[in-house]
Length: 164
Image 1 (cartoon, one colour):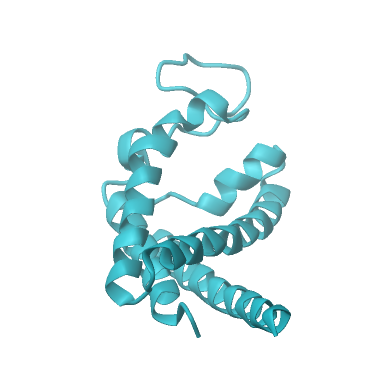
Image 2 (tube, rainbow, N blue to C red):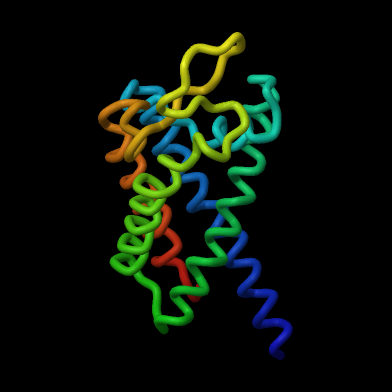
């Protein structure tokens, strides 16, 4: 009986984690397409792997989607620890996730990303990605809004469907 419950939980995780990642991707890609931000998390992930822009986009999208499932597992673990999910806890967790990304991860990215310039780098002989800066503001002043909105909805979707 326990094995069946684990399998149902894994199926729910894959289903709702995939849906939540799709919602996050639509919000972030839509924001980019509308000119609200130039941030593309799949592209940034992909350029860790390769310098070829086409391959970076494709590989980054695959790794990004797999990462969405991994984060769904972490969200479900938090909901299990707290004892419940729901819209409000999901939105709160997604917002905290986005703020951590914006305030901590993005500013440190130039120091670990092999193809990204740092804030104080001078010109070099080959193109490099622009550093995101604090809260990703180098990619547009609406980048924090789009990032928080997308991640909050990601968490909201997972919170609503936690336990189904």
